[in-house]
Image (tube, rainbow, N blue to C red):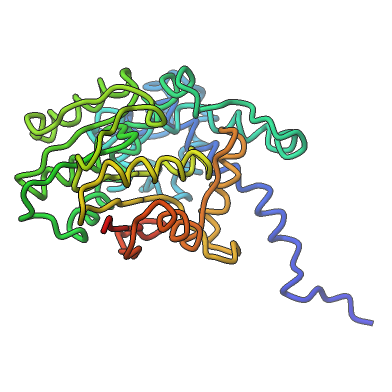
Amino acid sequence: MSHTVPEALDPSVLLQTHFSFAPARTLVAAARLNVFSALADGPRSAQEVADRIDATSRGTRMLLDALTAMQLLAKDSGRYRLLPLSERYLVRESPDYLGSLFESDALWQAWAGLTETIRGGQPPQRVDQEDKAQEFFPILVRSLHVANRAPAERLAQALEIADRRPLAVLDIGCGSGIWGIAIAESAPHARVTALDFPQILELTREYATRHGVQDRFEYLPGDLRTAALGTARFDLSILGNIVHSEGEKSSRALFRRLHRATRPGGQLAICDMVPNDERTGPIYPLLFALNMLVNTTAGDTFTLGEYSAWLGEAGFTEVRTCEIGSHSPAIVATRP
């Protein structure tokens, strides 16, 4: 009798999945210790890095070896050096630094409560509340600005608005303003209204200035659920990674308000995590739904079929998708 385990039943897959937290915690430790900045001026030995980050030689050597295996560092003759990815995104002094997100333990702590949240329905934290949002999102915004820059530029191109005038744009829950900034850079006649909580808008101003479009931005401080959006005021509204934290009820109400605020022929663009209609994949949008479970009271990820139905209910037509080089396509709807 054969005891050979079929390849499809290989238990090592389960063990690897269970241990998949290890690369994430390795990256967190490296960001907190500022390892990548310690290598910014050239290759160094483990002992030299340990001296720079005020850590033990043994622990530093193990960390650097793991980072090398993760292809974040290279190792030549016992000396470690940065690779282009880590040099651009993980050196704290880089304008494209992503590590502020990795240095925070907010997501880790929330996911630690996943079991109890599934049982009881109450998330460990609520980033959809204004007080928590203003504490959490300034950390997140700086990283998302870098991560969403290329998708935002591709969205601006896909919308074909470069020569459209006038072009009044509403960037809802704008964060750094990257989606509106990309529109302003692509369309010289665009004027962007950035809507977010007051503390977040301070960051938006910084980024609009950095990109040289501050003269075409105005700011609407407040909660996207209650802010006055007006009637037939905008040619384009953008929901950049907003719907997943709002949930179905709030988003459907927002779609109706945005329909009123949009001029005839205007568009609503939604960028978010979109699973397939059967909710069998892709894996990232489905894992992100669990991320919303432990961080919000109503957040979730939604399918194209759900978006199409809700947008049609609100009065939008011609719902289509466009690829923006992200985890999911953008969804664009038109107000007739």
